Length: 334
Length: 305
Image (cartoon, rainbow over all chains, first blue to last red; front, top):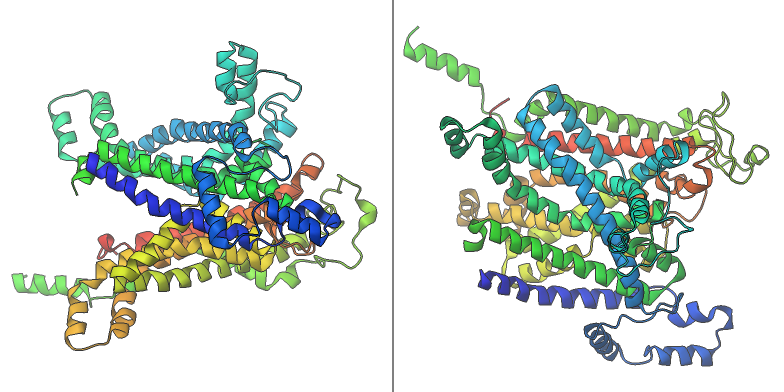
């Protein structure tokens, strides 16, 4: 097991290096220079030179890359050109928002997807099964932002049941020690704040969770269908275990193996989707931050943000791989 | 009836051995879900072709009807304008119909360019093996390490927003997916007996790759290609929605039509719902076909026509 983990960790190094080269090269290929975007019409050759010197942009490329790598390793992602705050500071505030949203979406997908998929498999071929298959295809066909707009229109604009933008009431002034608003409300023992945070989370979570929901449901259905004809399930039934127990302890437990992998693999989708969801619902996370950074040509933010999300994605995949190996000995041995 | 006669009937029933494609086609024809998918896609293709006949108005009139619109308010549907006017005084129905052309075309170009580059890279990697394989696949791994839409946003940021830029961006995000798929497929075929036989009679490497391995490795690519078309339409609309699409406001692209949604969601929700429904139906069409094809081409189901 240790060898497997070490091997996977070693494989990570070339990926991360390649990623840093890619992001570095990409930033250099962007149109318009840093000096131009900062100075605008005040740009004179002397000022441009000064700014280039200030950011080390007058050094040779390999030296720039080396400096960049050194600062990355020390955890310095630069300073935002538009807000003049360190990128890491902004990430500290915005990443919790994105995680909260992603967790909300995943919770929605799992809580609904596994029972629905299980029921569909149990009633294989029935109208419920057929409907759920069509519904899941419809689910993966609705773009996140279209669903977000529709949800916002129905529940916020028409019915006024739920708020349409932001993470908390705009007039609220509350302390946020962790920036996870739900956790903060629990720490502060403030039920009003907790309900406010949950209310704001519902619509974005449903919008972002719709595609994972459809996928989790399909995989659960397929996986339960596979497992329920296994010999050990028949044995369990034959020895007289109550059907509920067989389903819980033998069918569902084994069927959960592929489902757990799929859930891990949805992270990339969630991070991509967060950009759109956060834009629709004005959610102050990493996604909406990157969208504004493109408009502002805020290179340090783009560079730091994209690299950060990619690293998160790679690490989550690593954790999924390792946990899968722990659950399933067949992978570990091959 | 003697045993021999029964066997003869059996053989007759089985008929002539048919190819994978013929079998797949007959399975596809009996799949109602796939048929609905084909109908949806055919419908949109027809709309795209016949747009000038159906649209009733010019999507970009030289003199838009500005008298009827005020900031944040557009008149709703009427007998003259079925879906109302947009915030710039242009007929929404006409823009939706002409938008079909752009969205289908962008989706098609993006998916097929990603497919062809991925196809070449993947089959080279799979067939050549060794160092070439390692280099190509590590590059693909690095590309896959960036979540799809983020990669596309990065590429658009580099090329600048616009119509062909989003095609390129979505196309590039598709490359590693197809490369991986093809490589796996080619690897599975490479050591088959028929490849060995071709090599034994002296067929050249390129000949083996193109006329023996690829035709056998292509069926998962067709399935993935259809599904990629669906995601390409979604991604293109997403980039358009984020304001990275065609910068010329006269281009009626479905995602771009939703960019200023907050300005009219309260007063005229139809302007948001109509392009949304169009995107969903087009994507659903391709997803249904892809799903049907997957079942039809599944070798495990062969012989169960």
